[in-house]
Length: 289
Image (cartoon, rainbow, N blue to C red; front, side, top):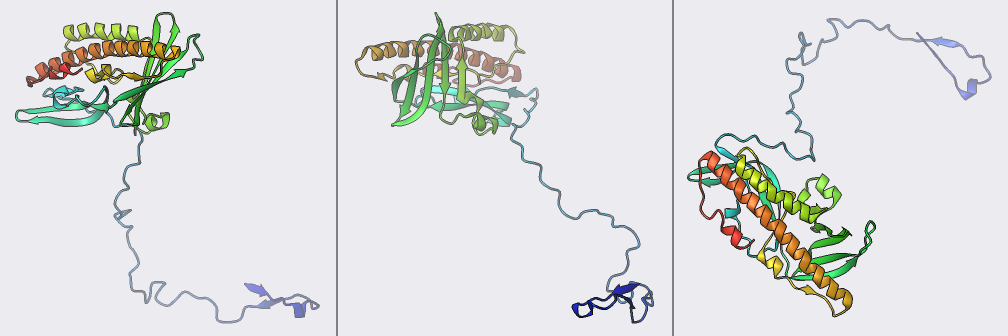
């Protein structure tokens, strides 16, 4: 092995290779591990990693639904555990897992249905432009204590067909995709009359087929307080029509509410009977919805 020496002072001289002076490199006496504190490894280590395993990756998707047992109710909305006299609209969403509803006698529910309460003490109106219908729509804004709590859009795409959309403030496509807001924060009824008919027909199916389940996450329930909200408007012709449409929207949502509550009660009775339990006050909530 050799090295080449070069400097600016020698730039005029011919470049020649010089020798590498010093003692030659030899194998150390006693081997490479001589004088070291640790001994050379004879076998590979048994454990490849001494660190704790990494936590699972963060998932935005909802957890898988829990499979119920023969002693657990499935996807029941426990109406007897809630008070509704301070709300006007109720929407629903499911919670994965097993929830203990009562300890003595023991009563559990898998994938229990929870409620979101919408409060309101006033309603205002704005005209709503429609891209796909000739008639003008109506936007009703609900508020509680001066704070916006919900909006209801009503349009008439064709004669006799009414489309109603109920939107809560926390709704956005991103928040629903990230599971920070339930899907029921946006409820869209393309034909409210047909939806009422389908839910009423479902009630008869629930009564005849004990294996049929019902989760009201696509419907809603309104309380008597919803029907008592008076629309705040002026005395113009447009406001007169808005008040008339508001009464119509209240009536159609009340019909859907009654049909939905009937299905909830029928399914609750079926599940309680299946697991051999009974609860008091099962139908008391109907005095307010």
